[in-house]
Length: 119
Image 1: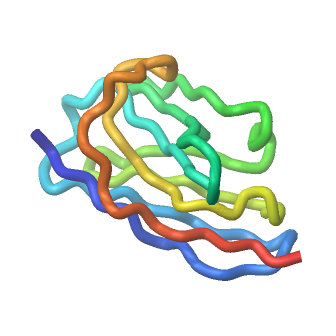
Image 2: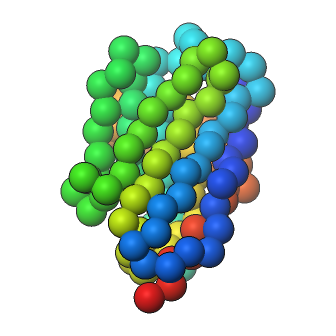
Image 3: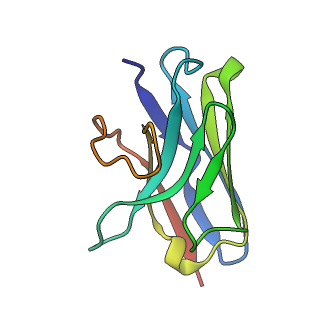
């Protein structure tokens, strides 16, 4: 099983951008679907964006038009480009293997990467 490690979080002001990376311990070429999730304080973890191997993407309505998910199989890396960040985007962001956007039975979670957006 490929292990995933998130990075790229930080403290930014509203309107700024960040790019998160999710790096696999091995090849992600054979992984059909992967997703970015986030958990804000006091809230449940939620799906932010999902991408299939063939490139089909899904976005939560709250980030559609601002966030872009992509994957570079040659670099064993999935990305989340986050533009026009809002304070409500503040959360710990995680990546995971997920065959479909609606998949709930996911593998173990990594440590995530903290994103904090100040107003």
